[in-house]
Length: 382
Image 1 (cartoon, rainbow, N blue to C red):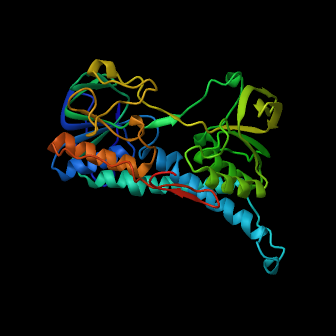
Image 2 (cartoon, rainbow, N blue to C red):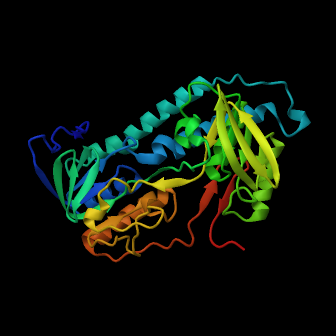
Image 3 (tube, helix red, strand yellow):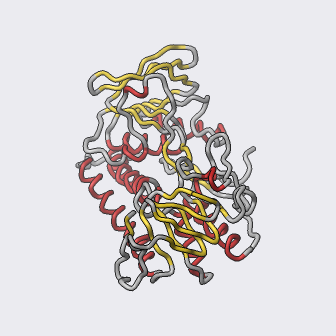
């Protein structure tokens, strides 16, 4: 177990190798948006907490491999693509941007590092000992105790905020293919000349258009009859028309039969509305949803139940089946938005530590797809 010494806070208490047990008002398992909101709320309530982080660096999905890097690279792609293709003849001036993929990736990395420091590491340091950070894998050994690399941490209350990771569908042959996910696609060392994207949800379309604007030939394959499964069909049709107008190939109602790799080329054989077709590209991106990080936490030792997909079951107060153990963020599977995760983390904390009885109304949460044109939704569909 490694404990991070927070910058600018040398007086902050650390858990030493000699310490066998630590006791806290709130033990937070996770280091992303929900976890940070919980730590902040616990501090506001005058409570002592510990944050146990494992997997992604501090800050979780949004700052490291989600919102921040993707929106930055989408903006880079737009600046590269649209000035060369003005909508009006009067604007045609022959200008062509000089695009450097490696520079774009380096800029993205610098931005992520800077925001991780300013929005997470530096904030944690400012908590001045009220929140401790432990790096390592937490596992429940009972309903009031976790173990981290052989250390025992006791909590009056617990919050599980371990997030999610990309889902890898068991496509026939996928184990033989070098594929990308949204995490690895934005950290490539070389731009692929062509790419197949499996999945036409927000991530697949955003990253697909991003690479298209970089100059990559992009083909998107989707299982259901429309892109953006949760969006009104007429809106999805308009977006598909715009993307295809830019040169993206989109095939819906597509059933994957087999995937394989020969040299540096990836192949996908699919049934497209009754026609068997084979697609080939330099890269294969899987954008097929997420799975919760609920495995290997020892949940059964604490009496915490999960559903058939592995998401932690909670009541309206975000409390799990084990009294005193709460969960928030992607791991509960309600909605996969950073802002909602933060709201859940704060709400679960006041309920756990202050018996507040607060709930969240999920019926009016806005969401956006950052393609160009963008798509925004809120409330009920037709």
